[in-house]
Amino acid sequence: MPVPPVANLALLLGLSFFFGLAFEDFYRRGDGPRPGGVRTFPLLAMTGGALYLLDTTRLLPLAAGLLILGAWLIVYYRDRTRAVDATGAPDVELIVPACNVLAYLLGPISLGEPAWVGVGVTVTAVLLLTGRERLHELARRLELREIVTAGQFLILTGLVLPLLPDQPVTTLTAITPYKAWLALLAVCTISYASYLLQRYVAPPGGDLWVAALGGLYSSTATTVVLARRAAADPADLPRALAGIILATALMYPRVLAVIAVFDPSLALGLAPPLLALCVLGLVLAAWQYRRAGAARGGAGEGVEPRNPLELNAAALFAVLFVVISIVSSWVKSRFGEAGIDVLAAVVGVTDINPFVLSLAQGAAAPLSVGAAAAAVLIAVASNNLVNAFYTAAFAGLRASLPAARSLVVLGLSGVAIALWLISHGA
Image (cartoon, rainbow, N blue to C red; front, side, top):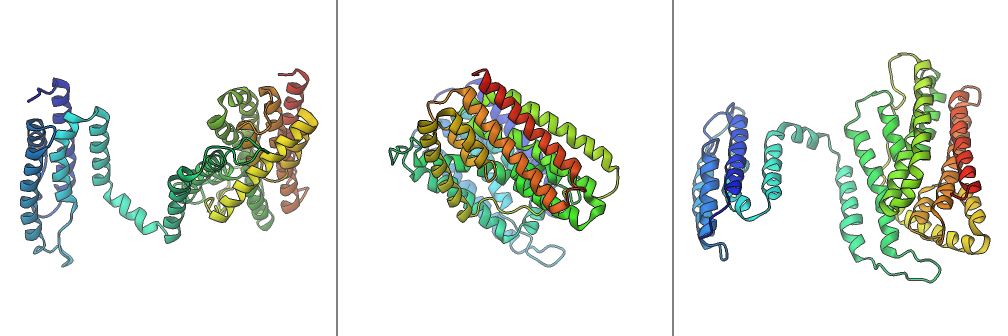
């Protein structure tokens, strides 16, 4: 029988003691005894570990011990089904037997697997055990459509992506179906995370919180919603304008993060200008927010996020990505880098993500890092100018002038940096 290292034994005892301590603390306020605790779990873990070491190949002693433990837990469970709580409902739950079985299996896990496996399993179990009230509250708040949304995300990532080929299917572009779908997932993941935070984490009326998350989700959509809100309620106009500027400022790190997934060198070249523009946008948003005063209410209040994982929208994004990749490749071969810059200004009027990601994946190759960075900056600047137009159109030119002016400043600053990169051949 192999002798386990002292570190593995210490890990086994530490994890089982931690698990038992959390279990006992959680149930000490309950009525009636619960098997398990700060002494039982370490003994169960050591028993499981010892039986595992007796036969690490076929695991027969470990399986026999698990059957004995299971039989004892069945007796306990049958006895608990006869008990009732204060409301008259059966006072029984599967969490207690499950914790005892897990404590038993911590022995072989700690002795036979890498340390991170045992730590991860134990910490996850403790968080699930002690987070019961918060998890039940989340389940009560969760709508059925959110379950469907999570299912769509799993379909996009775990089902569709592995089935797609990673070889070009046409000579018009080097982008493969796998890379096209991966680009879609990069955008959807950031949008989905922002969507969840906006719906379930951001406090109601949380001032600029929701506007900031909306910027990570879609700066254009947030701009339109806030501009309409400002037009409907002039009292919230100053705060709404601050939210519009903030949403645009946070677009820059979102674009940078998406590019970094596919082209770290391009992301490195874009980091200084994009982060500088982000800082400038934050300063302008803070200035507008200060002008708005400390009135109650929030710029982001009432901004209802849309589901970013609708399959129709995902399919449309994939089609746009492929089309723009083909167009970028053709424009580069026909008109050179100047044609790419003109195309960047045009696509900035709509959704810049397909164009930016096509550049990051080399659709317009060969294209230098400086030329690609300039094209991205032009596309983002064009999108800023479009957002300024939307702000003025929905909130009124005179009323929206502070935000529209700030967006124009950000857009022109981006164009100026792009022109400097082009002129210096960076």
